[in-house]
Amino acid sequence: MTATIGPVKATPYLWPYDGTVGVDHVALVCIDWQTDFCGPGGYVETMGYDIALTRAGLPATARLLAHARSLGMLVIHTREGHDPDLSDLPANKRWRSAQIGAEIGGQGPCGRILVKGEPGWEIVPEVAPVAGEVVVDKPGKGAFYATNLDLVLRTHRITHLILTGITTDVCVHTTMREANDRGYECLILSDCTGATDPSNHAAALHMVTMQGGVFGCVSTSDDVVEATEPSNHPTHRPKAD
Amino acid sequence: MITVDARPAPFSFATDSTALLVIDMQRDFLEPGGFGESLGNDVAQLRRTIGPLADFMVKWRAAALPIIHTREGHRPDLSDCPPAKLTRGKPSMRIGDPGPKGRILIRGEYGHDIIDELAPIDGEPVVDKPGKGAFYATELQDLLDQGGITSLLVAGVTTEVCVHTTVREANDRGYECLVLADCVGSYFPEFQRVGLDMIAAQGGIFGWVADSTSVPL
Image (cartoon, rainbow over all chains, first blue to last red; front, top):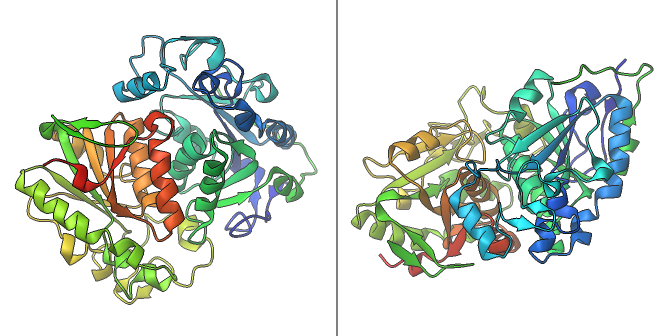
């Protein structure tokens, strides 16, 4: 028998809506845990924000990753970034980053800011992908637009998503909204996310819980682990290309 | 070019490449006795947008500029409604149930249509969307491409749900979005405030914010 998750203690309802789900239909999505967003010398620090806030969810996410890997759950990492020639960088996004003193494509302490292949664009070691895990590169805040994420999820028959990453109100929320419109049942974890502004983190989590869970549910990594029913047999998931 | 005094910086747009996007000003969300009110929401929080938006639409149309309307809703057989959306949270009324203004959020029902005060006029497209975002599973992108539209002025409800989701989608697609603060509304004042703040944060991470009265038409 496959391991299952649920019901997870969550707000505003026990997650998932359909009671329990086999881990072979769940993906753990780790959003933009990149040096540019939570490492010293990255984009967020260059803009003048405190990276302690965006790093806060790293330990819990690392523990949950180990749990997901032990269950054979599909793990997906995303990275925000642009091609070195910046041909996929919208002009207004570039202009706004320049206005705030950290122009995308410009040189920063960790290489060219938010450019693919640069040190700052890499995922931090605490939650780095291991062989066989899917990494989705995205040019925007949402992980669905202009990426193959939806195809990867459908190919793996994934119906439920557990979301971690940064920042709560920007890339995690945009991705959760996209996933919700596409019919995925989503759970965002308050201890595995973080924002450049603590009040935006709190407000973003609160928004999810309104109207009966307009985008899904909010919970914690401990509650997910607690609500896991392990399998008698380890799950082996085929490696994705 | 028209330049608007906006947060976090002035917003400029060309009249030949800008559309006004009016999101989900539907009876189900806005009218007393409708679905939104039946969930315990204070529709007055949304209805305060009707006057400013109606005034702005008059000016926008007088300048012969394009308006695109959206409606959230589903097919009568609910085949385009994800099970999670239909059943989560055990709502007192579900999508498709008979409501005070017809079946809730079902295309073709009275409550699903746009309120009389802001009704589309001939030639203005109405985009029906199954989700919160107006780009996913709709023809909006095609309409904008055909019209050569690169900038959007955004109005409608609710600020933190459908307006935010659509602005996030538009922003990732490279559109420049000005959210009209007096023409967007939330049932919750806290989300109205923080929703607008999030748009303009980090140098305008999703776009710009200004009142419609700041647009010099």
